[in-house]
Length: 104
Image (cartoon, rainbow, N blue to C red):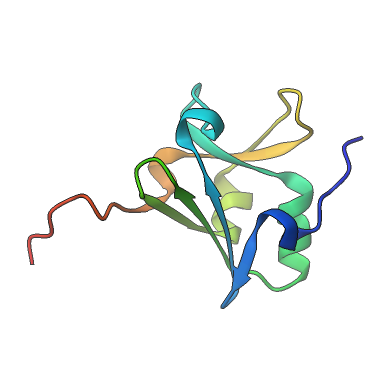
């Protein structure tokens, strides 16, 4: 079993949001396209009252946000050698792309 790293070592917690900075080219699941988070981290976050998860792609500056409930309801468990993770397909994340022009 993999050791669970304390949330504060990899993630930042502010206003009930668990956030993490990643490089999409290294960390994004390709098939199916999804963001994955260690299952044990998400379970601990739920116990600690976290409501949302935010992933910031350092390569594009795009942010992905999802509620913890959505991750547990619509995500699926995978283990590809890094311990159990819950993967939430990309199309289910709220996307904030600062590079995209705003209409209004």
